[in-house]
Image (tube, rainbow, N blue to C red; front, side, top):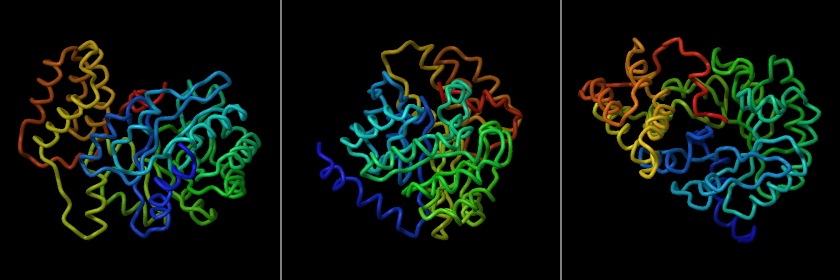
Length: 356
């Protein structure tokens, strides 16, 4: 598949999104969570405008992981896909970028935001933010190698946002086509409020569209983030897992329409569909339940305020037990806004399933 064909298939729609007026809504990449089966299910619920793959791990002996590549070659959403990578070795990143451009992608993305210690300790993901000079060198090499769109997802620093003053000119220097900013440092993980002022700075100083990322949890909240930052759009991960109607609700709110509010039975149906979508029938029942617990870590935050649902669901070991707890809490017709209750979760809970 040549680059000319790829560009005809994917770039016009992405270009139209970048230059449009409605907020651009992207599904965030979350390792081992926002995979191909999850994409397919999300598209049924209204879905995002733009999808980012889980990150390809790039190093001197790496190959494109087939299960991630299928998100591109078997893309079920009908929407543009951006291929994300994580790594620090420049020749390997360049080689992978060239290889990925032979597929139907809208852009090549570099991950500068992953906060998982197993990633940043290798000086990949968010770990690169400790070395702005290395970031500069990587972006320079990639901008030269990438003939399609080139994008970056970043946090505002590693242990301090002070480095953002250095990072923004570097991003601007390399003519990015889209910048996604998660408004926390790597060390803050998911513990703190999102620093929207830093996202607003990126919007003001970059000459490319900027997506705001971090703790978007409702249609009203989404409008507040857009207004506070001036961002071109939003990247949403955990909020969309908890509430698969969220992208649809944001569009409704932007159009001034009444916002759909799911009821308990709707959420129960979603959990059942999620199980069927992401749990391969040929794997052990125990492994299926462990897979679902990754998603329920996020969904459970919007189900009830005491933490009992999550306490119970984390201790089940069989499908019967799993759905027994789900029926107990969700088999009703009461409205469920699915906005997160504060349960004092540890950051390890929030990272569960996102990175390895």
